[in-house]
Amino acid sequence: MEIIRGLHNITARHKGCVVTIGTFDGLHHGHQMLLSHLKAKSEELNYPNLLVTFEPLPREYFQGAVVPARLTRFREKVTILRGLALDRLLCIPFNERTRIIPAKDVIEGLLVNTLDVQYLVVGDDFRFGEGARGNYEMLKEAGDRFGFGVSHMGTLKFEHGRISSSRIRDALSLGDFELAEKLLGRPYFIMGRVVYGRQLGHRLGVPTANIRLQRYRAALEGVFAVTVTGLDQQYDGIANIGVRPTVDGKEPLLEVHIFDFDEEIYGRLLTVTFLNKVRDEQTFDGLDSLKNQIEKDISETREWFAKRRLERDRDIVA
Image (cartoon, rainbow, N blue to C red; front, side, top):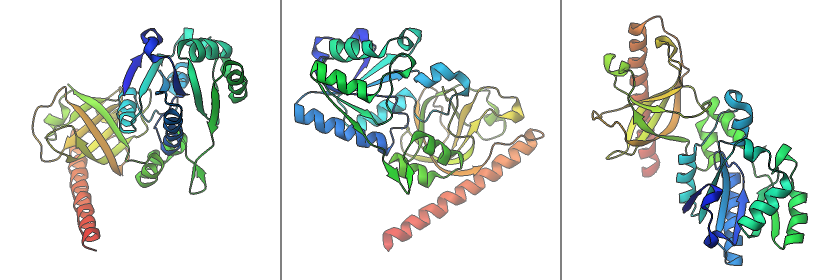
């Protein structure tokens, strides 16, 4: 998959494509259905497919810190899209200049003149342009005028509910990882590089790999059983997401204690996959109380993994 960062990097060879536009936060089953249609049209018309998205997400630009939690950062989105065999990804900065572009200029300037769109696929609730005045009907009229096809995908449902990013956020906040996985089509994960922290974990005898979330808000808060990849093998572990109120933390952080692992891994890119919620984040009356709770959490999480492996072995034998 080719990644194009900014409209200034569009060249003549990028013109002529089958396009979709959106934020695609989570890249859940509904998004995947749309992308399957995109790829089918791409093959039918014999043009490359292209997904157009934005950083930051438009709602983050407008709402800032009060925005709903983001499910996937750009790196995570790229990783998932590579697995879906997309041809090209165009990421456009969303800023004041982007915000005030009229809907007709999005069509004529971006879709027609810059990309030479041959076919456009959008979601059923897609809006665009200044004041979100652009809609599907406007796109259909433009397609008739400029000679490109347009279609929209209806809502995909699961268990009597709409598959949506907000429903996935709700499932994650409740610790319902089984439902979240069914809606996403994969377990929920966060990626990031290990950074230097305050070394508190070492002082407590529980070293952690610290990963900055780089989100206005995370979809999770609390303590979780996780697996970690990006090292020599997959490891089990326990993770905390939060601001660490006991030690006056301010910035949301993902801290992962990797079981049976003791190496320096600063700068390594890890994928942390969330499997089970252990407890909510708490405030303790001191480091001794915090250490005791961490030891209890680790013991319970190791037991959870042991039980999980035993159940899987039974399923294989059966």
